[in-house]
Length: 113
Length: 113
Image (tube, rainbow over all chains, first blue to last red; front, side):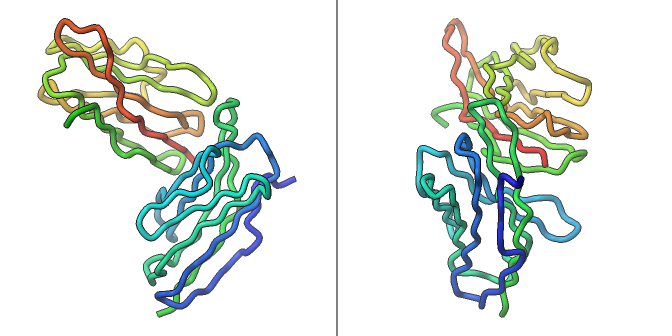
C-alpha cells in the first residue's frame, strides 16, 4: 500500500498563475515532510520542508501547507514561471521515530508561457 | 556572524552522488566538531579539529566520509558516493579558548533519494 500519494501525475498551469501540487499520506506517525523537484537528467533540488508542529511554511514563491487531520499537504507556487516546469516529489518521514523518508510518485508540472 | 553557521540547511541528493556540507564556526574558536544525528538517534561523533593539530577522525563511519578545515576556520564535510543510510542531520559545533560550552549550528538535513 502506497504511504505517500500524489494523485495527479501531471499538471499544466499558465505562467504567472498559481500552481498547486497535492500530496496525501496514510501514516499518522509522519512528522516531517519535504518537497523537491527534479529536471530531466539532473539531480534533485530541495524546495521546502515542514515539520508536523506547523501548518504552513513559506520560502519565496513556495508555500507548503500541512493539514494533519486530513493527512494532506500541498505545495503552492506563486507566481508560476516556465523554469518551474519539472517533476515535483513529496516525501514524508516519521523522523523522530527512526524511520527514513517515503517518497511519492511525483507530479510533472508544465508551466506554459 | 554571531553563531555557528551551516549550509545548506537542507540537501536532497541522488544515491551515488557526492555532497559537501559547510560549517562556519564562531570566529576565533579553535575546536570544531562534526556530528551526525540519524533518524530517531542521538548525536554520533564524526570528526574533531583542534587548532593546527591533526584531526581526530575516529568517528568517521567509512572512507566515503572526509572533512577538512581550511585556515583554522571554515570546515567542509564531504560524503562521496552517498547511500540512503547517510540520510541524517549533520551538525557542526565549535568551542573557543578555555570555554567548555559547545555552540552548535542549526544543522544540514541530508536526504539521499
